[in-house]
Image (cartoon, rainbow, N blue to C red; front, side, top):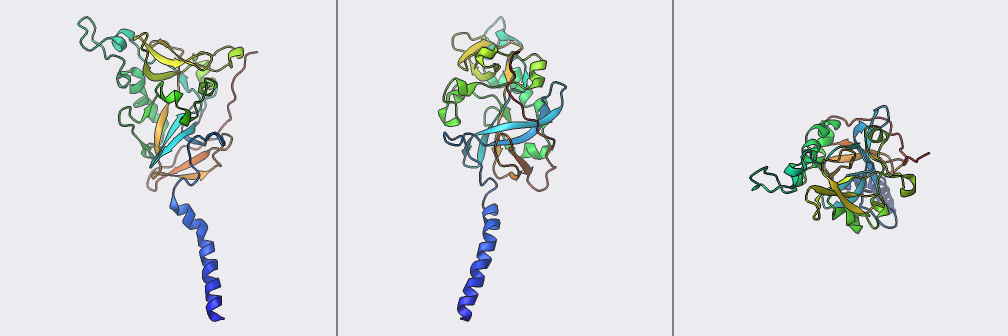
Length: 271
């Protein structure tokens, strides 16, 4: 009888410990990439002006894929409008061009790439930056390529799936918006140079298809992406839905992330 009682006590102890052990097993027990059945998981990281008045709100990200120890995140909304590069000849020309040397569409040398890995990083607390890992080529923050925006494994299964909407702030500060019969969404850049016009970069067009436009275009949208290190942050609260995204806590020793109220944004419609 004593042996049986000891066994039952041990079993109850193990059952009580199971939730704690499961929590310690991994920082993101529910984090996953896109799935056809369940869609995306969402989280917030950093902050950026998003209302018409420029109020800073948490940036909402969708998880495209989880690969080993990192997750690829894409901003749910187009955050602002800006040219990919200010000089289309420099963007298009070869380095050997005698009249005006350029960089043959190398995204890493564009004004956009420099901005995303420079001034844009000020929108994140140091603890949040510590939770990210640089892309080997593109840096800490970057734009997706044209091919990545065709990747069905990331959820881009149709033209419609590539559409994105700008924040009130972006629209109030120059972001182009298509007519309501097209969806009232906005165009945004990729990191890929156009093959048909080397002065242009590939971008999302009115039906969600991929086309191109000259890199100096000022009303084209910026929709950043980044890699999150799974061992450098933990879920604080939320359920991972678009309405209640996960919020993250950085590793111990880092400062706390910016915490503000998340105001849901809906696609703007024309009157």
